[in-house]
Length: 448
Ligand code: AMP
Image (cartoon, rainbow, N blue to C red; front, side, top):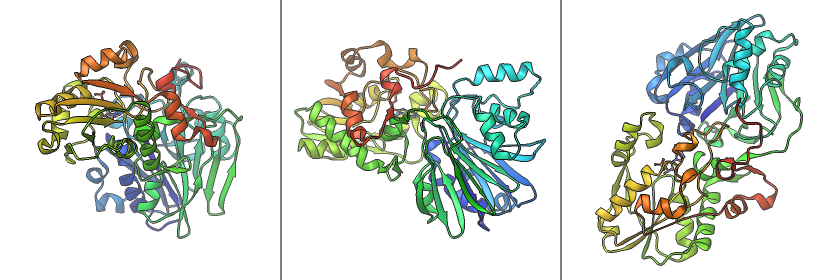
């Protein structure tokens, strides 16, 4: 899970990249980095931490030039360490290049073993580094041809930006797992994981980068091509469920509206006798509004979220995550006392958060707690860039809905059906989704 950003043709490229990353911060909070080009060479800065903490005015001033790329990272492959912070910057036979990646390659381990056998020395433990080695080894001519050459040897999810001294290159895998959009501000082109980044810098949203599309931006303008073999498209449905920011326009529709629809569909499928609908903030807010509207049960605020802690799930250590729920959420007793409460969240992963939330609501006087989840049971790990734990840690992989209800101590628990999710997410309008985390049906080969 990561966010990528790129800009070409703006005097303040690194400053705008900083703002763009800020608007993509929800996609990764472990590390942040920017690489800028002044037309002659690349300069970079990467560090662990949040965008606003990593960069200062002086650091941004040390990244001059009209082109830049940036990255926020949440480790899915490779540990949480600064050597894995992106964008990576290297010198190779063709000059200098930098790369930032959102997604995961499923054949990365196999590719790495082969490259290491052939003498490659890796600097990080991330799957992204394979691309750099393949680009360096490619015998193709221009840089973008080397990129294509490299990516043809890898499979999986990639929304990526590359920067050389003279070019910005963006590419999205043919399956289209992760989002990537194109925008324009003044005479500059902008690439970003989500439209939130365009909105903040007042860039106009032009269009999505299409699955399988390669875009090259340089002094001559923008060129688009489709160099990869066509494959059935399969956009990540979990971006709609949880990951993308609600104000983002994703796969043609604003995420907030989609999430409200998921909540409305959930109310239809899984009604409940209750006095009040509350959300687990922030992730459950849109769906709970949809649930309340469709069910006619009033919506109220039953949990307050502290904005001074990160997402509980983000911290890699179990001990911090457990502690984090209380740090993050506080109950509103006046909403809960004596009430039958429907509490809506977007997903259950390990079940630890839900268990603590149900206890917190009951301890605060709720008479009944009915948990409603606006997606199906998460029973399969994601290999395409969402950080889900191994199958053993996913509670739904080994427990029935009734067992999970007992574990989280809810009076009732119900999930949205997969059919309801895909329909409400817009399947009927021709969008096709990857829902492997719910179905176990993976659109590529499994990791090697
Ligand atoms: P858990 O305690 O593991 O069941 O955590 C579930 C909570 O984590 C839900 O409130 C989700 O909003 C959130 N969540 C679901 N998937 C992820 C993810 N991949 N990364 C971070 N948070 C997540």
